[in-house]
Image (cartoon, rainbow, N blue to C red; front, top):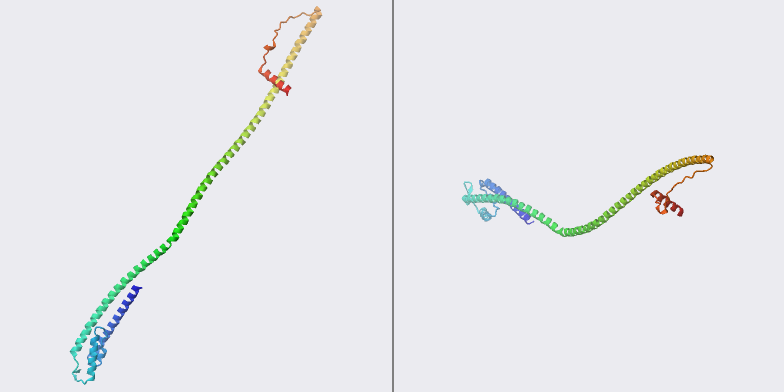
Length: 289
Protein backbone atom coordinates (compact mmCIF):
# COMPACT_ATOMS: atom_id res chain seq x y z
CA UNK A 1 0.00 0.00 0.00
CA UNK A 2 2.86 2.41 0.78
CA UNK A 3 4.46 1.88 -2.65
CA UNK A 4 1.06 2.28 -4.32
CA UNK A 5 0.43 5.62 -2.59
CA UNK A 6 3.92 6.84 -3.51
CA UNK A 7 3.34 5.84 -7.10
CA UNK A 8 0.02 7.70 -7.15
CA UNK A 9 1.64 10.82 -5.68
CA UNK A 10 4.42 10.74 -8.28
CA UNK A 11 1.87 10.33 -11.07
CA UNK A 12 -0.18 13.25 -9.78
CA UNK A 13 2.96 15.41 -9.52
CA UNK A 14 3.93 14.54 -13.09
CA UNK A 15 0.41 15.40 -14.28
CA UNK A 16 0.54 18.73 -12.46
CA UNK A 17 3.96 19.48 -14.02
CA UNK A 18 2.62 18.69 -17.48
CA UNK A 19 -0.43 20.91 -16.88
CA UNK A 20 1.81 23.75 -15.72
CA UNK A 21 4.10 23.35 -18.76
CA UNK A 22 1.11 23.36 -21.11
CA UNK A 23 -0.31 26.49 -19.44
CA UNK A 24 3.07 28.22 -19.70
CA UNK A 25 3.29 27.35 -23.38
CA UNK A 26 -0.18 28.79 -23.95
CA UNK A 27 0.70 31.95 -22.02
CA UNK A 28 3.93 32.34 -23.96
CA UNK A 29 2.11 32.03 -27.25
CA UNK A 30 -0.52 34.53 -26.14
CA UNK A 31 2.23 36.90 -25.00
CA UNK A 32 4.03 36.69 -28.34
CA UNK A 33 0.79 37.25 -30.26
CA UNK A 34 -0.26 40.19 -28.10
CA UNK A 35 3.24 41.76 -27.71
CA UNK A 36 3.13 43.65 -31.04
CA UNK A 37 -0.19 45.35 -30.24
CA UNK A 38 1.32 46.92 -27.07
CA UNK A 39 -2.04 46.94 -25.38
CA UNK A 40 -2.32 47.04 -21.65
CA UNK A 41 -4.33 43.81 -21.64
CA UNK A 42 -1.26 41.71 -22.69
CA UNK A 43 0.13 41.83 -19.20
CA UNK A 44 -3.05 40.19 -17.87
CA UNK A 45 -2.79 37.30 -20.34
CA UNK A 46 0.95 36.83 -19.75
CA UNK A 47 0.69 36.58 -16.03
CA UNK A 48 2.86 33.56 -14.97
CA UNK A 49 1.35 30.83 -12.86
CA UNK A 50 4.53 29.00 -12.14
CA UNK A 51 5.94 29.19 -8.62
CA UNK A 52 9.29 30.48 -9.92
CA UNK A 53 7.85 33.65 -11.52
CA UNK A 54 5.16 34.39 -8.95
CA UNK A 55 6.82 37.55 -7.52
CA UNK A 56 7.62 38.90 -10.97
CA UNK A 57 4.04 38.41 -12.10
CA UNK A 58 2.75 40.26 -9.05
CA UNK A 59 5.12 43.20 -9.59
CA UNK A 60 4.28 43.36 -13.28
CA UNK A 61 0.58 43.30 -12.54
CA UNK A 62 1.01 46.15 -10.03
CA UNK A 63 3.03 48.24 -12.49
CA UNK A 64 0.48 47.62 -15.22
CA UNK A 65 -2.35 48.66 -12.93
CA UNK A 66 -0.51 51.87 -12.06
CA UNK A 67 0.19 52.61 -15.68
CA UNK A 68 -3.44 52.10 -16.60
CA UNK A 69 -4.59 54.51 -13.91
CA UNK A 70 -2.17 57.29 -15.00
CA UNK A 71 -2.37 59.08 -18.37
CA UNK A 72 0.16 57.81 -20.93
CA UNK A 73 1.49 58.80 -24.34
CA UNK A 74 2.27 56.57 -27.33
CA UNK A 75 5.67 56.75 -28.99
CA UNK A 76 5.92 54.73 -32.26
CA UNK A 77 2.89 52.75 -31.17
CA UNK A 78 4.44 52.03 -27.76
CA UNK A 79 3.48 53.82 -24.58
CA UNK A 80 6.18 56.13 -23.37
CA UNK A 81 6.03 54.88 -19.80
CA UNK A 82 6.36 51.17 -20.95
CA UNK A 83 9.91 49.74 -20.66
CA UNK A 84 10.21 47.42 -23.68
CA UNK A 85 13.64 46.16 -22.63
CA UNK A 86 12.27 45.10 -19.26
CA UNK A 87 9.44 43.21 -20.97
CA UNK A 88 11.92 41.46 -23.24
CA UNK A 89 14.11 40.54 -20.31
CA UNK A 90 11.08 39.24 -18.44
CA UNK A 91 10.01 37.31 -21.52
CA UNK A 92 13.49 35.83 -21.88
CA UNK A 93 13.52 35.04 -18.19
CA UNK A 94 10.11 33.37 -18.42
CA UNK A 95 11.23 31.45 -21.47
CA UNK A 96 14.37 30.27 -19.67
CA UNK A 97 12.29 29.34 -16.64
CA UNK A 98 9.85 27.49 -18.85
CA UNK A 99 12.71 25.62 -20.55
CA UNK A 100 14.13 24.71 -17.15
CA UNK A 101 10.71 23.65 -15.89
CA UNK A 102 10.05 21.68 -19.07
CA UNK A 103 13.44 19.95 -18.84
CA UNK A 104 12.89 19.31 -15.16
CA UNK A 105 9.46 17.90 -15.93
CA UNK A 106 10.91 15.60 -18.59
CA UNK A 107 13.66 14.49 -16.20
CA UNK A 108 11.07 14.03 -13.49
CA UNK A 109 8.91 12.05 -15.90
CA UNK A 110 11.87 9.81 -16.83
CA UNK A 111 12.85 9.43 -13.19
CA UNK A 112 9.23 8.81 -12.27
CA UNK A 113 9.02 6.14 -14.99
CA UNK A 114 12.22 4.53 -13.69
CA UNK A 115 10.95 4.80 -10.14
CA UNK A 116 7.61 3.37 -11.27
CA UNK A 117 9.46 0.45 -12.87
CA UNK A 118 11.50 -0.01 -9.71
CA UNK A 119 8.35 0.28 -7.62
CA UNK A 120 6.64 -2.28 -9.87
CA UNK A 121 9.62 -4.61 -9.50
CA UNK A 122 9.70 -4.05 -5.76
CA UNK A 123 5.94 -4.55 -5.61
CA UNK A 124 6.22 -7.78 -7.60
CA UNK A 125 9.06 -8.97 -5.38
CA UNK A 126 7.12 -7.93 -2.30
CA UNK A 127 3.99 -9.71 -3.55
CA UNK A 128 6.11 -12.75 -4.38
CA UNK A 129 7.71 -12.66 -0.95
CA UNK A 130 4.31 -12.10 0.60
CA UNK A 131 2.93 -15.09 -1.29
CA UNK A 132 5.91 -17.17 -0.20
CA UNK A 133 5.47 -16.00 3.38
CA UNK A 134 1.75 -16.78 3.26
CA UNK A 135 2.50 -20.23 1.87
CA UNK A 136 5.13 -20.67 4.56
CA UNK A 137 2.63 -19.58 7.19
CA UNK A 138 0.08 -22.01 5.80
CA UNK A 139 2.69 -24.75 5.82
CA UNK A 140 3.73 -23.86 9.36
CA UNK A 141 0.08 -23.79 10.37
CA UNK A 142 -0.33 -27.28 8.93
CA UNK A 143 2.67 -28.65 10.87
CA UNK A 144 0.62 -29.60 13.99
CA UNK A 145 -1.87 -31.44 11.80
CA UNK A 146 1.02 -33.13 10.01
CA UNK A 147 2.58 -34.12 13.34
CA UNK A 148 -0.75 -35.53 14.51
CA UNK A 149 -1.11 -37.46 11.25
CA UNK A 150 2.45 -38.76 11.60
CA UNK A 151 1.73 -39.88 15.14
CA UNK A 152 -1.45 -41.58 13.98
CA UNK A 153 0.49 -43.20 11.14
CA UNK A 154 3.13 -44.36 13.64
CA UNK A 155 0.42 -45.90 15.81
CA UNK A 156 -1.10 -47.57 12.76
CA UNK A 157 2.33 -48.92 11.79
CA UNK A 158 2.85 -50.26 15.32
CA UNK A 159 -0.55 -51.94 15.25
CA UNK A 160 0.24 -53.34 11.80
CA UNK A 161 3.54 -54.68 13.13
CA UNK A 162 1.76 -56.38 16.02
CA UNK A 163 -0.82 -57.79 13.62
CA UNK A 164 2.02 -58.99 11.39
CA UNK A 165 3.64 -60.81 14.32
CA UNK A 166 0.31 -62.39 15.25
CA UNK A 167 -0.20 -63.31 11.62
CA UNK A 168 3.22 -64.99 11.53
CA UNK A 169 2.32 -67.02 14.64
CA UNK A 170 -1.03 -67.99 13.11
CA UNK A 171 0.70 -68.88 9.84
CA UNK A 172 3.12 -71.13 11.71
CA UNK A 173 0.16 -72.80 13.40
CA UNK A 174 -1.55 -73.14 10.03
CA UNK A 175 1.60 -74.67 8.54
CA UNK A 176 1.78 -77.15 11.43
CA UNK A 177 -1.89 -77.97 10.94
CA UNK A 178 -1.37 -78.41 7.19
CA UNK A 179 1.60 -80.69 7.84
CA UNK A 180 -0.47 -82.66 10.33
CA UNK A 181 -3.32 -82.95 7.81
CA UNK A 182 -0.88 -84.06 5.13
CA UNK A 183 0.55 -86.61 7.56
CA UNK A 184 -2.95 -87.88 8.36
CA UNK A 185 -3.74 -88.12 4.66
CA UNK A 186 -0.47 -89.95 4.09
CA UNK A 187 -1.23 -92.33 6.95
CA UNK A 188 -4.74 -92.95 5.62
CA UNK A 189 -3.36 -93.50 2.15
CA UNK A 190 -0.78 -95.92 3.48
CA UNK A 191 -3.43 -97.70 5.53
CA UNK A 192 -5.60 -97.94 2.45
CA UNK A 193 -2.69 -99.25 0.42
CA UNK A 194 -1.87 -101.66 3.24
CA UNK A 195 -5.46 -102.88 3.39
CA UNK A 196 -5.48 -103.33 -0.38
CA UNK A 197 -2.18 -105.17 -0.20
CA UNK A 198 -3.46 -107.26 2.68
CA UNK A 199 -6.65 -108.07 0.79
CA UNK A 200 -4.59 -108.90 -2.26
CA UNK A 201 -2.35 -111.17 -0.23
CA UNK A 202 -5.37 -112.77 1.41
CA UNK A 203 -6.84 -113.41 -2.01
CA UNK A 204 -3.54 -114.84 -3.17
CA UNK A 205 -3.36 -116.92 0.02
CA UNK A 206 -6.88 -118.19 -0.56
CA UNK A 207 -6.00 -119.03 -4.14
CA UNK A 208 -2.84 -120.72 -2.92
CA UNK A 209 -4.84 -122.65 -0.33
CA UNK A 210 -7.27 -123.71 -2.99
CA UNK A 211 -4.39 -124.79 -5.20
CA UNK A 212 -2.80 -126.65 -2.28
CA UNK A 213 -6.13 -128.25 -1.44
CA UNK A 214 -6.59 -129.28 -5.04
CA UNK A 215 -3.07 -130.66 -5.13
CA UNK A 216 -3.67 -132.40 -1.82
CA UNK A 217 -6.90 -133.88 -3.05
CA UNK A 218 -5.20 -135.02 -6.21
CA UNK A 219 -2.35 -136.51 -4.19
CA UNK A 220 -4.86 -138.23 -1.89
CA UNK A 221 -6.64 -139.63 -4.90
CA UNK A 222 -3.34 -140.77 -6.36
CA UNK A 223 -2.36 -142.30 -3.01
CA UNK A 224 -5.71 -144.03 -2.71
CA UNK A 225 -5.40 -145.36 -6.20
CA UNK A 226 -1.84 -146.51 -5.43
CA UNK A 227 -2.97 -148.16 -2.20
CA UNK A 228 -5.90 -149.73 -4.00
CA UNK A 229 -3.54 -151.01 -6.64
CA UNK A 230 -1.19 -152.36 -3.97
CA UNK A 231 -4.09 -153.94 -2.18
CA UNK A 232 -5.22 -155.54 -5.39
CA UNK A 233 -1.72 -156.76 -6.08
CA UNK A 234 -1.37 -158.11 -2.54
CA UNK A 235 -4.81 -159.66 -2.81
CA UNK A 236 -3.75 -161.26 -6.03
CA UNK A 237 -0.53 -162.50 -4.40
CA UNK A 238 -2.47 -163.77 -1.42
CA UNK A 239 -4.95 -165.48 -3.71
CA UNK A 240 -2.12 -167.12 -5.62
CA UNK A 241 -0.43 -168.22 -2.39
CA UNK A 242 -3.74 -169.51 -1.07
CA UNK A 243 -4.35 -171.48 -4.22
CA UNK A 244 -0.86 -172.91 -4.07
CA UNK A 245 -1.35 -173.82 -0.42
CA UNK A 246 -4.67 -175.42 -1.27
CA UNK A 247 -3.09 -177.36 -4.08
CA UNK A 248 -0.22 -178.45 -1.84
CA UNK A 249 -2.65 -179.40 0.88
CA UNK A 250 -4.71 -181.34 -1.56
CA UNK A 251 -1.66 -183.13 -2.82
CA UNK A 252 0.29 -183.65 0.38
CA UNK A 253 -2.39 -183.29 3.03
CA UNK A 254 -0.36 -180.75 4.89
CA UNK A 255 1.27 -177.37 4.50
CA UNK A 256 4.96 -176.74 4.62
CA UNK A 257 5.89 -174.32 7.32
CA UNK A 258 7.92 -171.42 6.26
CA UNK A 259 10.16 -170.10 8.95
CA UNK A 260 10.60 -166.35 8.69
CA UNK A 261 12.98 -164.36 10.78
CA UNK A 262 11.54 -160.93 11.47
CA UNK A 263 13.43 -158.18 13.15
CA UNK A 264 11.49 -156.98 16.11
CA UNK A 265 11.79 -153.30 16.83
CA UNK A 266 11.48 -151.67 20.24
CA UNK A 267 9.12 -148.79 20.79
CA UNK A 268 12.02 -146.47 21.63
CA UNK A 269 13.62 -147.21 18.29
CA UNK A 270 10.62 -146.00 16.35
CA UNK A 271 11.27 -142.51 14.89
CA UNK A 272 8.47 -140.60 13.29
CA UNK A 273 9.07 -138.46 10.25
CA UNK A 274 8.11 -134.77 10.04
CA UNK A 275 5.00 -135.46 8.04
CA UNK A 276 3.97 -138.15 10.50
CA UNK A 277 4.59 -135.77 13.42
CA UNK A 278 2.39 -133.14 11.80
CA UNK A 279 -0.26 -135.78 11.18
CA UNK A 280 -0.04 -136.88 14.82
CA UNK A 281 -0.33 -133.29 16.04
CA UNK A 282 -3.30 -132.71 13.79
CA UNK A 283 -4.88 -135.91 15.09
CA UNK A 284 -4.33 -134.91 18.71
CA UNK A 285 -5.73 -131.44 18.00
CA UNK A 286 -8.77 -133.00 16.32
CA UNK A 287 -9.31 -135.39 19.20
CA UNK A 288 -8.80 -132.74 21.88
CA UNK A 289 -10.71 -130.30 19.81
